[in-house]
Amino acid sequence: MRSRLVFIAVSLLLVLPIVTGTLSAREQTGDEDSLFKHLAVFTEVLGLVKDAYVEPTDESVLMASAVDGATDALDPFSIYVPAEGVKSYSAARAIGESHSGLMLLRERGVVFVVGVVPGSPGDKAGLRLGDIVTEIGGEQTHKTPMWEIQSQLAQPVGTKVQLDVLHNQEHETKSLELADFDVPPAELRLVDGAGVLRIYRFSSETPDQVAEALKSADTKAVDHLLIDLRGVAGGNAEAAYRVAGLFADGDLGSLKAREDQLVAFRGAPPRWHGKVVVLVDRGTLGAGEVLATVLRQKLDASLVGERTFGYAGRLKRVDLSTGGHLWITDAFYTGPDAEPVRGSLVPDLAVRDTLRGGQATDEEQLEDAIFDEGLSLLLAEDDADTAGDQKAA
Image (cartoon, rainbow, N blue to C red; front, side, top):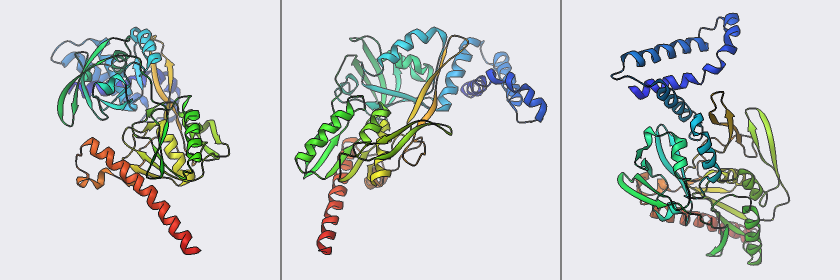
């Protein structure tokens, strides 16, 4: 009950700064659904919590928790940082995932793993995509603001962090030691005559790495390519457009705020001419979704695997009068069709559905199945085209 009251209070708190600006409009329109009706509800709920809750409440804690809950309701990336946390969180954002290799998000109050960089401390500790984090550093995550959780993973190198997680409905305790690590570069290998391009992260170096990999593919006369974007969470979306420009020209997409196009992305004459199949999963997020979207729309590339996370947005920092910060999504990246990437990409071939009737499946088995199905589809398309050419001849 308390959490529900807090959530209502929090949602309305975000409305308060603009109430004054709506006063004249309310008087002119007589709109019964205006902010004032909601403000009345907020005032009533806050009063009830203060006067009737089983124990005395700290209003400052209540308000901070309420605003934190409101950002959680917006999307998993928006975060409220109180004034006392600004300095430490700003330092943590500068470090990001470079000491842990983990991306954690909160949705509907649940903190879970959405990204694990191969070879990182998080990977070595055994954290996996989809793990639910119940405690970090001895503190329950449902009571800890997201900015504090992210700050714990950005502590100095050598710091040990303990996480309690639920993996496949089983409780496990993981301990990782924060450290610097190198993200593996994009690489190309040959499997059954097809090129397999593995991208682990989108950074400013990724487009050059992919360009070199495509030169290698040309040298080996490879004309069909499997692009593996599984587990590619976050990263630089503009780098993803630059990679897309190696495969397609013309309009690739844009950064769009509501109806305004802020930045347009275009591709030069492509370096790759051949068939493409893209592997995706629940950990394909942000920049990976941008590239998958462009390849699907420009090259008619098939997506194989699982639904992607469904978010390719830009965060903007808003400085509050209290000295705190609000990090909020202010724009989304789009594909060539100008539609924002803000929902899961549905694969053309959903592999999990082909295993055990869609029930829980061993993750390694699923990973192998996604790869095998993607490769089979790529080679089958190539064989079909070859047969068609022979028939026409």
